[in-house]
Structures are given as structure tokens and as C-alpha cells.
Length: 185
Image (cartoon, rainbow, N blue to C red; front, top):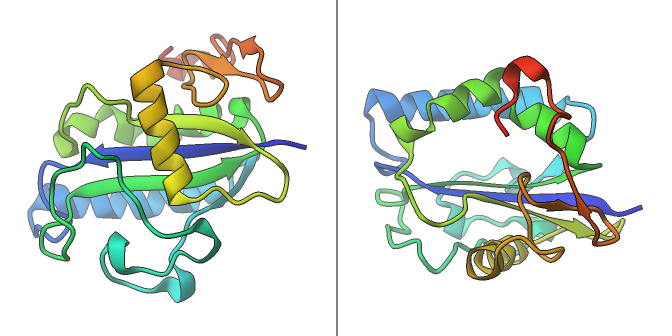
């Protein structure tokens, strides 16, 4: 049964090492959000550094998730002092559970504050694609799909919630599937 891969990428206003309250707040909310989402129905896994290692994203061993990669438009640093990005790579059973997890609760609250932490960009900040059962998407896969989305718009190869595709490649709509009080699409 195919699974849904999700890659997110955002450029932060300040480096991860910045001791400013907003940066600390982002880190703290991110940890709580991951704990909440990891128990959500339909969530399967997300990229984690092997052995819980610490360091820059670029220096870590990501195991089966592959070597860390970023889109070509990321122009900030790659050292502990200068890295200014937030990114995720995860697997889901389907669009509905991903939508519900992302647009409710703690993650929804963080989305409402995203411009406090992230630079605005004309580039997409997330991309979905379907993978075969047993396939672990890599960081490079995510980057490739995000860049494809930017260059070609939503296609069965790389798509968004707004213009999504079923596993067999047919267009599908997810409008009206999320909790009505939290719906944003």
C-alpha cells in the first residue's frame, strides 16, 4: 500500500544558534509538536538523526533518510553558528491524517505564528508525493520534489494540500475534510 511522504522547508529569520527568545520559542514549540504529531493516527515516521546525535543538519548521520540536502534557493549558513532553517521529512498513511495533524492543535498554533520565525518566500514550503510501501524517502527526494513543485506546479510527482493527487495519480480534493473550526483551505 502506498504511503505519503511530506517534506517541509523554511528559512528562519535568525540562525538556530541565536539565543533570542523567538528562536528558543521555535525550538521549544517544535519539540512539543513532534511529540504530539508522532502519536497522531496516520503518522508513520519522520527523519531523525541516528543515535540522537547533535550538530548541524548537514553533519548528522540520517541513516536510511539519506544525506541531508536543502533546496538550491537556501543561501544562509551551514555551520552551527549560521544554519537558519527548519525542515522535516515524514511518512503518513494518507492525506486526511496529515491534514488533520497539521491544521489542528499545537501545529496549527505554530502555523499561525510562522511569520514570527520564518522569512516569507515565493518558494513552496511543503511538498507531498507517494512512495511504495517499504520505501524510505530521502532528504534529496524531498528537495527534488520541492524544486519540481516550484518549477512545474502540483503534479502527481509533487503536490500540495490545495492541489493534491491520489496514489494512482488522479486529482483529489481534500477541501472540507479537516475539522471545520480549524479549516484553512
